[in-house]
Structure formats: structure tokens, C-alpha cells
Image 1 (cartoon, one colour):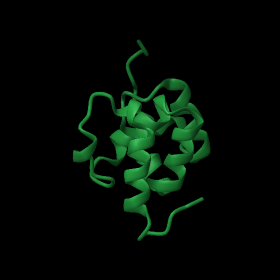
Image 2: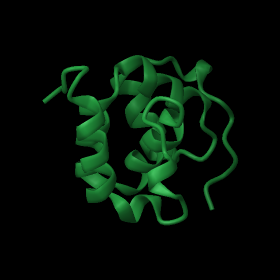
Image 3: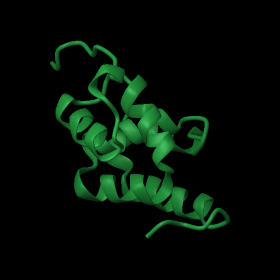
Image 4: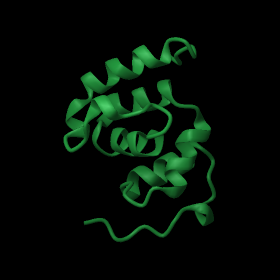
Length: 101
């Protein structure tokens, strides 16, 4: 379910409360839905499981997800490859991320 633009802020706050463990090292009250989008998308996809994936595709447009997939170096390789396929991103556009720990 995609949220209408006016519903996004309330849905975002609900998601932060529901997915609080994904943001264990961040002040969730200080997170901005748009300004911190790449960070939030990466955390939800890396640590949020299926619920994190659903929140991501419901809250963010594909362009924001694609930006995070292309530019974030801390995205898990399996997640990066899945999302690159889903967003139709050629492998050549993906950053060379360091080996996963």
C-alpha cells in the first residue's frame, strides 16, 4: 500500500516506532523522512526483514530506493543485488562496496 503524500509523515512516525530496533544507534526523533532517506532505506532493507521491505516500498518512491542502492556502501550485497534487480539498475552503476563483514 503506497501512502498518499499527506499520509506519509504519520506513516513514517509509525514505522519508526515499529522498526525501532533497526535504528538502535540513532535518535529516531531527529530522523527526517526525506533528508535521511538513503540511511533509513538501507537500515530497513538490511535489518528490517519483510516488514522493513514493505515499509520501504510503501514510504519511498523507486527513485529514492534506487539512489540508496547505488550510493550506500553499507548495504548488504544480497540486499543490494535484489533491490538493483527490482529497480532495474545495471550492475555497472553500483558502487564497489567493501567486502561484507
